Length: 127
Image 1 (cartoon, rainbow, N blue to C red):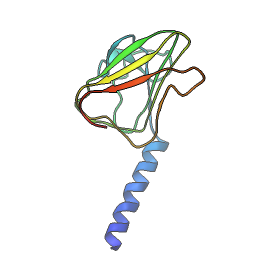
Image 2: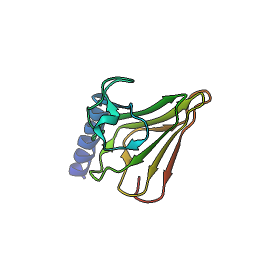
Image 3: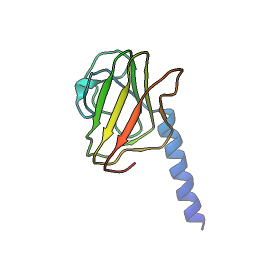
Image 4: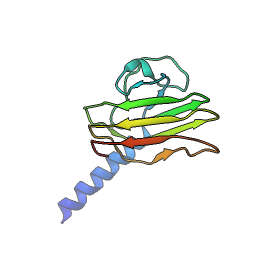
């Protein structure tokens, strides 16, 4: 019993540490594949090329007046921190997942601001 409590405590501490130190990935591309490094930056509207999100990262898919379709195609199965999908004005963001696994330790927000729009379409894989 003591070993189980110790393991659960260690796992909880690790998840809290991951959330506190999570790097951020911002989608800056147009339509495209999740794993295309040119679609990602570490700041909103920043320089591309930081690579697709990895375990522990916070992921932001935002757009203002632009519609985007993002295809989740990551076979590495990262355990991400959070996901925000939100487009404002005339834009919308659609994320499609037909295979692989997409998992999170934190929250997933879709279309969460005033008049925000977004969708997540899963036809395969798991989350």
